[in-house]
Structures are given as C-alpha cells and as structure tokens.
Length: 117
Image (tube, rainbow, N blue to C red; front, side, top):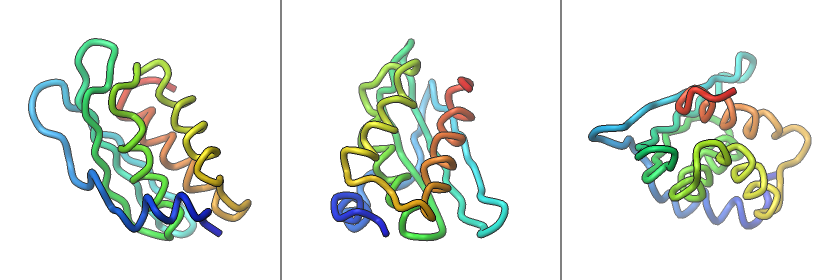
C-alpha cells in the first residue's frame, strides 16, 4: 500500500505536464502486465536537471512515484538522479512488495529521458 507521505505527494499532484524549451528530453515506461504508464519530462542545463514534470496513468503507486520524481529531481545532477529518486521513495515511506513496479517504471523513464542506464 502506498505510504502516507507518498499518498500526500499523489494528492498534491504538483508538477504534472511536460517541460518546454531547449534542453528538454522525455522518457517513458510501461508495465507490460498491468498497463501502468509513466512519463518524465526533464529540462537540463549541462549536467543538471533544472525542471522536471510528469504524467502517469495506472495504480496510485505509479502515479505517486512519478509525481515524487518530478518533485525531487529538480536541481539534481543527472548522474545522481536515480539514487536521489530511490532515496526519496524510501524516505517517503517506501512501497509495498506488490508496488515495486512503480519504482522500476520511474527509473526506466528516467533512464530514457537522461540517456543513462
């Protein structure tokens, strides 16, 4: 079950949408079994993410993790982004075992948007 702090991020729904302008890259991922979908839109300047936005459809965990990603990735170096996202998920109460796909999808979308595995 989505933790209380992750649920708060989900309810707030901040930073939904897409970035625009120079330096924007998008990445998305889908869960092949349940059909959940996460898209991250990042605007970068050099090695830093200066703006992040999200779109997601699916279970509450997938939507909450996508929203959290946009919230915590702004101002982060690209090479630190995956670790920052993992730490943020953990610090917001983590995910139940059956919700692990939400973190995996967000990380795949992040990798696609940054070109980093």
